[in-house]
Image (cartoon, rainbow, N blue to C red; front, side, top):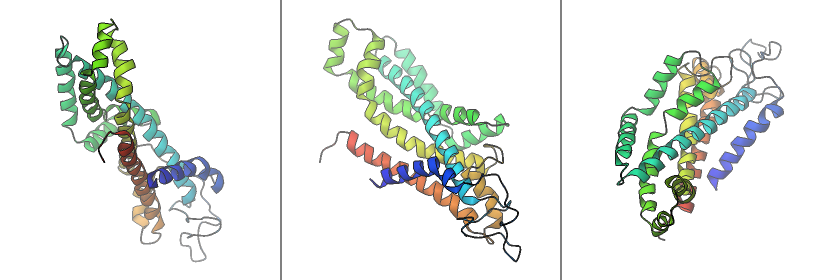
Length: 272
């Protein structure tokens, strides 16, 4: 329930935060952005979390950064789960059959993908892409994170494939495609939902890392990772420039991880 609350609050912040702020995320406030001594303005009625080094409203940039993080996380997770589920279902159904070579080929490819450290692989590809957009980040994150999903779904598919109702479906002459997608897939949907929840948290971290290392979305787009990177030089003057995006990343990842734990307990069969 804590995870649900955190996720709902995050989604509400991303959806309504920019409207509540009423300030453009990239507009510098040259009139009220500094105090009487010329220092960066702190927390005030005009700027609830102060301003950054370019006199832009921190609250507004956090809200717009939440939109970017959730957009990237949800769509990249969708790509990752979709590819991983298809590969896992095909490999699991082919295992032990006449198409066993297909399972071997797919799993060796998965082994190669899992041998690379995920964040290192993402950073390398992000740096190689160069001029990044939302679409390229979605594809990079989604197409480099499905390997673990494929392995888990393959194992679940092998378990379900051995059950009697699958043998009955074969005896009735149903095609392999129909058996996989209409009989096996619904029975592995529970683990997929749990994996998806944890994957969203992983995507938020990955997008933040790319932005922090300046291989993510280019400025002036507001992202939490870039806010951390830009604010670290000014943390002694205005700690909120580092603390605010850091807390947002922490709470977002915590919320989706807790949600995944709760979904696992609710959907996975276990003994009390």
